[in-house]
Length: 117
Image 1 (cartoon, rainbow, N blue to C red):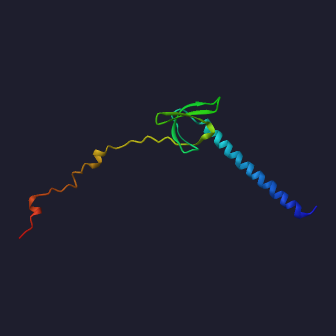
Image 2: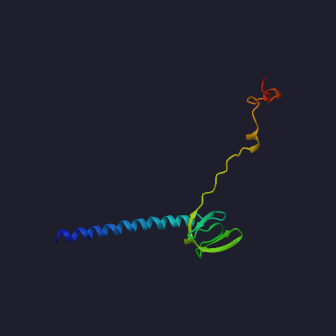
Image 3: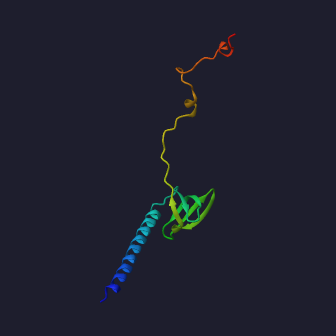
């Protein structure tokens, strides 16, 4: 056979193999996201709606989302991202941050404001 015919066939087969591999990874990632959904998770849909998961129905492959008091039902495939839960850290009170330290305080007296003659 001619080499000019074999090389394009090998390239086309290779392209299809790589495309199929990428699609398989994307399907697995989407399936993993769908399986990790739980009540209270914050999500973003493919339409850009930011909401909180109210209920997950794996039998019907639907999810109920609470968007500021409005319950909407979507397919599980409509979930684009799941927002990470914020880590709870100890917060300092703002009042303590505003207190001046006693070491660096200077007292202002009336003599400092009067220019000497």
